[in-house]
Image (cartoon, rainbow, N blue to C red; front, side, top):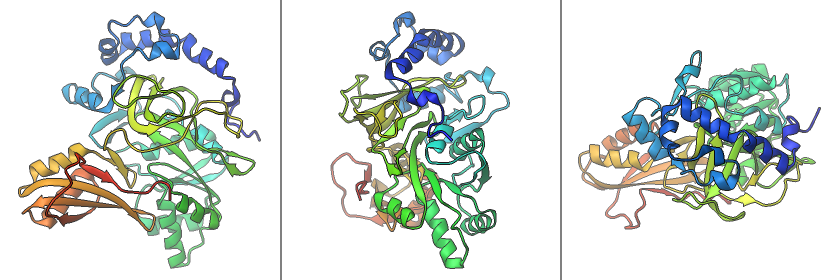
Length: 410
């Protein structure tokens, strides 16, 4: 069986760019005609001239706060969805809140290619441990697994003992989910005497795969790769191997245009310079042109040893803003601001994210007289995540609302 999902992965750079941009002006004309939000946003731009990356860079970057505002003014999608293509599909809500549709057809989030790169093949049984509730995470991987021709057990998030019991009986060869949930399952299996040795490979997303955790999985006989994905765009990039060894960085997915721009601007930066990841997606129901992810990365300016020829990025390198992921869920400074405004007796607050024993730890520090249990209750209500609460006498005057103190190099 081929090492590659298809021949698109080994095209020359020139072939790939020509395929994308030869029809790009037509694509822009179609979405500006059929989708009101893009009609307004692309107004005044000579779409016929957008035939290269240099020309693409003249279109303003659409950032998530703008999309959220558009959705508030024109719910649910802000005019950026072709609702005629939504019949028979799904609608999701991600933190923000941001409303997102599932695109038409098999594998609408382009996950199958990344799953294949992780060694999963047709006929494999995959235990999917991402949530299927409200957000699209579980469905992103589920659709990709099935499009690949593999079988999926939709475990979802939580219910660890039941998931361990199911895996012990079904004996899946692969796992998909957040980086830490597989460890939770394996630890619970050890504790209860269940055999989960069938797990041999995994692809994880929704958070950072720390080197120490990857090494632990390897010692337990599981080869784990990671994919970088967002609810809006699907799988943007993914890890690969060559001769059994992990390749540096991540290969960008086919069917997307990936750029790195200087944070807060629309301007692409040179290869190697850290900037904000900006992506163009050709999803027919939910096209996104120069969508700013808010995530930081940089281009690796050499071809991957795995033989895939698409652009490579260093992977997730933090946030261009303070919005960050905790246990696979985004937490936004606006949520902490809302907590301060809605909780009597809280004057100022700061959310500190740390890590202990391969688990994300969320601690809200606040100044004020509010009851800590009430603050903790509101924190869970607003973020959908549990955290501890500390009353402090002062907070640094550095503008930080969310302070991510996790060490991504260890």
